[in-house]
Length: 328
Image (cartoon, rainbow, N blue to C red):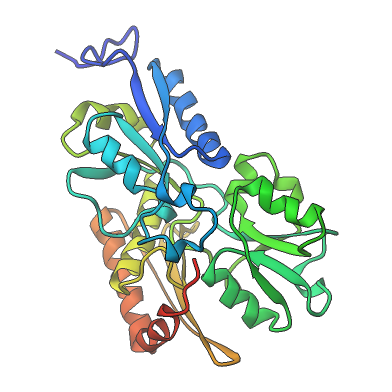
């Protein structure tokens, strides 16, 4: 028998409601809500389940001082393994490259803008900020790239939700902040963007702008449920980036940037950069590749290839330089 009732679009074996887990932040709920609405449009009954994570609970510390690079996901994964929820929605850039036994990253919806952006109090672009301007960011990757482009800037640590970060501009305590474009777009704040920061000068985090729906590996019914939301081009590009990161033994906190995308030539173009601060200087290495990619294995092989190129150029000592100085 077909597992789907074609009249209702809902599997005959479905539970009363699909329970989808999410962090409780405004952004996490906004992006999860978009996916929940898409599932409801397919005929499913869906409930949102808010789960508090260690990273959300400790806003007073840089992320690297709270724990490992899974501080925003472990509680969600535990609830999924325990059967309390049927699926968890994550920002893919928050997930460690080592997968959790029993769980799979089954669905990657279409990606939002993958780049970082500058939001300044008066709309100034990065090169227009006055000498010594104060710029807030919680990311070592962003901090190092800002230093490379504007060594005169005063970089200040910044955590909290998007609105609280933007409030630092309103109260005059910062001249600008660097945020992910995707978060501003999903919260309806795209009009606040002063400048999009992108390669070759400014590299985004691995898988930035991409969401992922994580499910239990043995839950074949949920695989069918979330399948229509998957975008294969996004998934292949993001997984190539994650393979690059894993090959460099870097967690999601490492000063590594990457960007993969399919171009009109039909090839996957993947680039990556490893950064470090060496005294007063910023040093980096960059590598890229482009060729046809049709499978997850192809994408991951490309990620490893670009990582090998970075290592050949001297990425390993740069990562060692930064490890003790990671602040987020």
